[in-house]
Length: 399
Image (cartoon, rainbow, N blue to C red; front, top):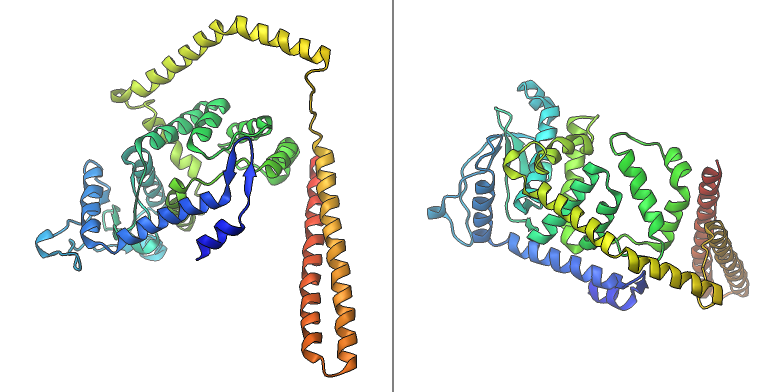
């Protein structure tokens, strides 16, 4: 029912390509429905546990319970008993002499392995489903909700990691576009500048004021264009990593995902693993091909530049300059106009309600007017809050 309402009332947005928010909701709904129905199938859960255990068979610090199939059925699942301490129980972990910082790092690495190497990950990693045994090994339970990432998506995720490691803004944007995370828009320069800034500062925690001072204009353009999307494929991936972030912060207040992920990313990208050099070679071949193609296309590009200049001279081509300062002023003015309309509506309804109450016998209608007046008053207050935020943002941009 909620999905049908979303399909009816969610508008389509154009950002270089047609995109409908309702199609996104449909994808998320399908992903959730698939995982939730699989969760009540104990035979499927047992197969998931076996597959998970096989994936980590060469990882001694991850344990998965063995499935006793002879005592299992579609309604009963019998697993090996693996006792452990809840992963967020700091007191018991420290009492057992287990380094909580190491546990946080291993939990992060385990999920990076699941998503980027195996393509098969635990989709419900709340603290009740992850424990730590006496030797400091991770114990995973409940394999009903599992997610799977198809190979081409996993390859694009590797491209993102490779681009982040090399601080290759173009490579990161290209991979995110192929993943569907970014919808190409008319103003890709703002996206490029914003991503480039965060790549340069990925190893440190930047302050909000610093970020706005450097790329405030670009952040505003991104907020207007809304080029970022939420692919349904990543519904449970992001849910898992957000849960993992909370676990990491609980175990180690200084937990930083990027710092923990960097060593594993280096290994994954064959910077430390000599046995897997194909990925680096493939990247070098791709770069060489791009350089060759660029050189071959140079005469055509010169001709296009000449054609463009000729069109500009004859007036057949017009340049559109985007004035972000004007867009911010227009947005502020629009918010104020809506707030003004809401104010008029609130005052009018309050007056009508008062008149009805004074006449007597129309208390119900007067109450309805007062309720609507209160609603519009809330909208007025929210409008002025938005104006204050826009003014604050403008002040931070101008320094």
